[in-house]
Image 1 (cartoon, rainbow, N blue to C red):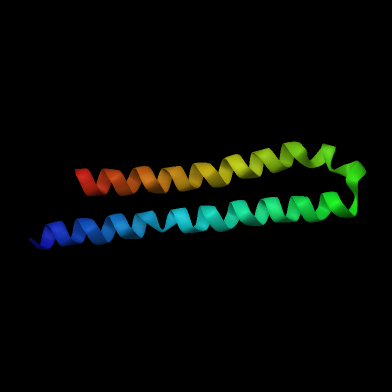
Image 2 (cartoon, rainbow, N blue to C red):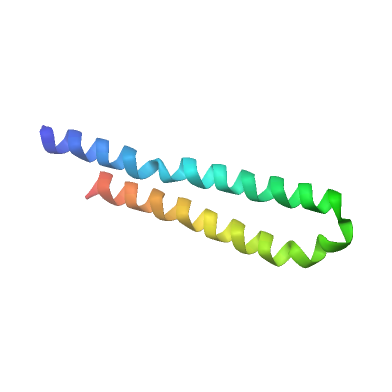
Length: 74
């Protein structure tokens, strides 16, 4: 019984990575839009950095989700 409760707690804690990923993705896109509206000519040059940051934040969230599922169902 206690082991099952510990699984749920561990999966919940691992799932908190999704919160950080959501905050990070929102921050990345808001800063990109802020910079693009201030200097539209430089926006195209920063698109690669935007997509790289988005991919890294999304990967962090996915790793947390997969870890939570592994903890929950193993």
